[in-house]
Length: 630
Ligand code: AHR
Image (cartoon, rainbow, N blue to C red):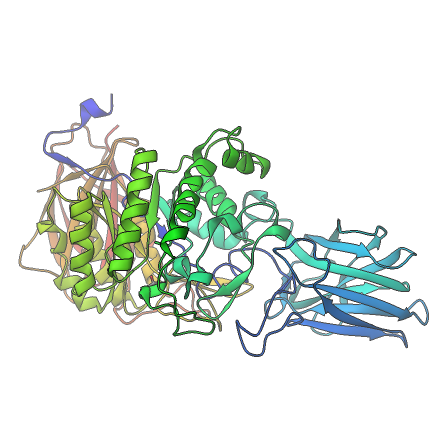
C-alpha cells in the first residue's frame, strides 16, 4: 500500500492545510463571482446602505414612440415577506407598434454579452389589469443597437415566475437590459434576473465560470465563507444569518453589506456548499458569535443600534440556529433542515466538518459568555464537528492572548488567527509556529497577507508558507485574504485576484498560493533540504502526498543572489528522475495588471532529479518540484 512505502521520520501534517478565504468584500459576490447580471433585481436597494440609493437605483423608466405610462414602487402585496419592494408598471397608452413603456437595468456598470451565447431571463410578474400584457425584452449595446430580444406574456393575476431565453447576435462590453410592455395594461414585477446560460458547472443560480475556474484550479483544501467582518456584520441586525440565504432566491433576505454596498444573498449558503462540493474543498462556514463587530454595537456605521450582544433570552434560539446548520448540511433528507437542502436539489449530505464561531472578536465578557454557550452546545450535540474559535486580528494584541486563554480553558480544537503585515514581518516571523504548544488547540491562519501585490510580497508569503508546512501538525489550515476584488469597487487592498465584468488578472500572490495549494501533502519530512540555516531569505519544505505518491519540494529564494541548496530524497524508495517543475521568477518590484496580466507568471517544465541532487535558485524565485515515487 502507499502507507507501506512511506519512509520513517515523516511527520503527519494536515492534508488540507491550504485553502481559500472567500468574503463578500470588493463586490466579490454580487457583481462578481455570482453570475447574476441585473443589479438591484428585487428593488431592495435603500438609502440606509448608501444615501443616494433607493428601490429604483440602477433602473430607468423608459417610454418610446409617443407611448406613455408610469412606474411606482409598492410593498403591499409582495412576492414574499422577505422581499418587500416591487415595481408596478402602468401602461396607459401604446401609440403604435414601435411604442413601449417599461424599465431598463444598467447592470453592474453594464453587462458583458458574448456573441452566440444564451442568457436566461426570468421575472416574477402579476397581472393587475384584465387583459394580458405583452412584454418585450431587449439587450442593447452602448450604441443603442439591439443585440438580443425575447418576449413574454404576463397573463395571470397573482405572482408567477415567467422565463425565456435571449440569444445574443453580437457581443457587447456594456449592454443594458430593457423590460418593455408593448400592450396597454397594468402589472407588478419583481426579481428581474438575467444569467448567462454558461455558469460554472452549468449550475442554475450559478457562478461566473472564469472566476470560479480560477478558484477550482487552485485545488483548495477548504473554503471559508462568507467573511471576514461580513459574517458578523456591523450591528446585531446586520449579522449574516445563514437561514436567510438558502431556498428560492425570491425568499432570501437581502441586506446591507458591511463594506458599503448591497448583498442579495443570491450567492448564499446553498451555493457556497455546492461550490465547495463541485471543486472538492471542505466547506468552512463562519457564523457570528452572537455579538456585534468588535463588540462595538455597530455604532460606527449607518444604522448601528449600539447593542453589543444578543440578549440572553435570545441565545437558545440562536444556538438552535447554529445546530440547525449541521442538520441542514449533514442530516438526512427526511430531517427538518435536511429536507430544505433536498428541496433545493441536494438530497445527499454536504459532509460539513468545521464550523467557525466568531471573527476577530474582542474577547469581552459578553463574547466569552456567548461563545462558550455556542461552543459547548455544538460540542455536546455534534462531537463530530470541529469548532474553530477566533483569536482576534493582532497576534501581538491583548485579545489574542485572552482568546487563546479561553480556548485552552474550553479545549477549543482550532483557533483562527489573522494578520496583515509588511513582507519583512513574514520573513522574520517564519519561526512563529515552531514553538507553538502541540498540546493546545491547532491553528487556522484564516486571514493573512503581506501589504502588497508585488513579487516581493509573494516571495515573503512563499517563505512563510514553507514554514506553515513545516508546522502542518499544529497549523491545520491557512488562507490568504482577501480573495477577489472588482476594479473600481475595491474597499481593501491587497487582494489575490482582480477582476472586472469582462476579465481578470492574477497577482504574483495568487501564483504562490496556487503553487502551494495545488501541491499539498500529508507528511512533512525534515532534513531533505540542506541550506544555510542563517539565511532567512531562503526557505524550503518537503512533503509527501500519500494519495499520489509524490514527494513535493518547495523552495523560495526571497534574496537578491542566486542560492544553491542540496536535496536528499534518498529515504524515498523509488525516485522517477523526470520531475515536474513549476517556477515563478520576477523582479521583486514586478506586478501584474489589467494591461500586463502576464508580467509575472509561473513556468512549468521537467527537471532531472536523483536521490541526492543540487538545485540552484535564481534570485526572487519560488519553485515546486514534484517527484513521483510510484
Ligand atoms: O480581509 C478583510 C478583513 O480583514 C476581514 O473582513 C476582517 O476579518 C479583517 O479585519
